[in-house]
Length: 345
Image 1 (cartoon, rainbow, N blue to C red):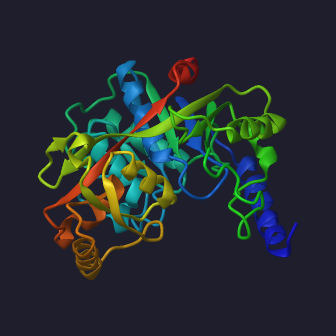
Image 2: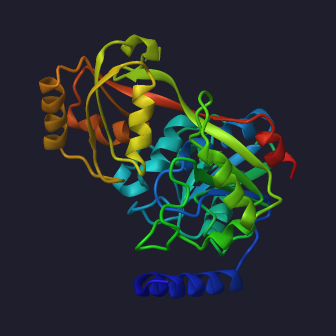
């Protein structure tokens, strides 16, 4: 182990030990969606999909999120009154997609869960959450921890771990030299494993090798495959159009996500001709000059459309985005049986 990795490992061990020592349990069932690497494995689309399925099955899901880089002090409900600087990018996206599901930001997920129950139970939730129609919780509560695999201080009934099939473990070294948040042996804690971003069409000979490596550390957890498929393109006015509309047209794409290459491939899958692409660092804070630069680069490429992510549009809505900008709506499409495994609590 390299010296920097060893220092990180010592910090990781201390954090785990101190967190597990004070671990608490919420009064309702709790599941976690997370990973063991940095970068985009698709946690946010997966969290949204699980929350939507929970609603369909009669649960009252409550999402508990750290709100990475969000300055708002938790616990608090994520609403449109908060900016991405205050709430964090992913919480605002989840709030936007899940209008009737409370999203609670806070570093201590146990405190966030208790806060949500108390606020919603006495009917103060709708005002706090931006006008939800139902004051009380209408079904069995289900807590969903967004990015919770390393949140040691809270018990969960099931841990779901997502692994990016395109870059599962990097160089297999811990941060900061590699992309691993934990040693690969930590996969043994997973109750469900999902290999994400696996195309439905076309063979992937490396997949068998990835599965063998996973099974070396966890031979029993159910393993599913998922892809992040483009569902529609959304104009700035809110109109949904089919991805076919960009087929054969020149497209300029940009994003600030953990795995920009994955988004780039998704844009290409719409059938548009990728005339240009710009990747910003994850959680980048856009300024007006960035939007002007994007517009200029797209113009020089002769692009008919500018395409970005749902997470990015939240951050640039107030910066004068050009009229030919479209937002790519992504759906977390997963194997049959995944939800049955989750809800067999």
